Length: 320
Image 1 (cartoon, rainbow, N blue to C red):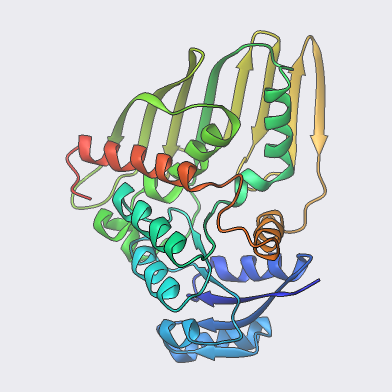
Image 2: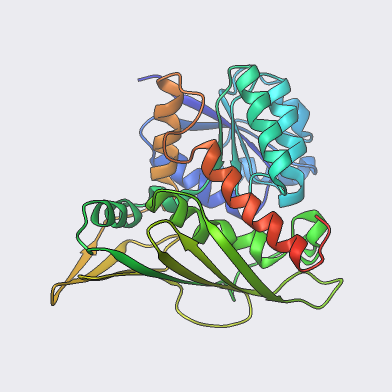
C-alpha cells in the first residue's frame, strides 16, 4: 500500500494531535512541517520526529516529496494557503472552517477541480464511529420520523490565539466551532439547511462569544443550536424521533453514543486512540483511489455550512 506523505502547514497546538492520528493511520506518514518561525518549526519537527522543517510555507509547497498538504494555521489564513498549495500542484486537506466566505470556498474548489487535485475540509467529527453509527440509525429509520435535533457545543476551555478576537481574521466562536454542528446536520440528513435565524453575544470589536441558532431541515425537522465559549454545559447532539432518541456526548471527539428506542437503552462504546485517525484514513483512501473530493465531506457540505455562517455574521452587522 502506497504511503501518503504529509506536509504540515503551521505549528499550532492541533498539529501534535493530528500527527498522532497520522502515525496511527493505515497509510500516512509525516515528512515535513513549516512554520512562520524556523526555530519553532525545527523544535516541533524534533519533538514529533518529522524529517524536514521549513521556515516558510512556500518551501513546503515546493517539496517534491510531499503528497498532501495539511493546513492548520489561523482561520483567516486558510484561503491564501489553500490557493498557494494548489498552485504548486499539491492536494490539500484544510482545517475547518476551510474559508471565511462562500465565495472563497467556491473559488478554491473550482481551482482544485481545474488542476485535478484533491481538496477537502478537515472535519474529523463526521468520520468518528459514533457519528457513523448515528447516521446509520437515522437513515435506517430506527428513530421513526425525526422531529427535532438539539445541539449544544460548549468550548469553555479551548486555547486560542489573539487572532480569535477578530472576526476579520477568522475569529469568533461561530467560525471556531459552528461547522461541527452544521456539518453533522448536513451529513446526517438529506436536503439543505433552511429558514435559519440566529442571535449572538458580542462586544465589538471583540468577536462573538455565543450563538443561539434555529433552523429547519426537510420533512419538517427542526433544529436548535447553542454554540458558546462562555456557557459551561455538556456538549452533545440529541436527535429526537417518534420512536425514541439518540445522544452523542462530546460529539467532536467522542467514543460513545446512547440510543433510547422503544423503551430500550443501549450504549455504544468505540475503542479510539486518536480522534483524527478516521478522517486521515478516509483522506488516504481518497488519494489512493484518485478521487478529487470526498464522498462524505463533499464540496457541497463545506459550502453550505460556510454560507450559513457567512449569512449569520452579515445579519448581525459583521462585515466578513
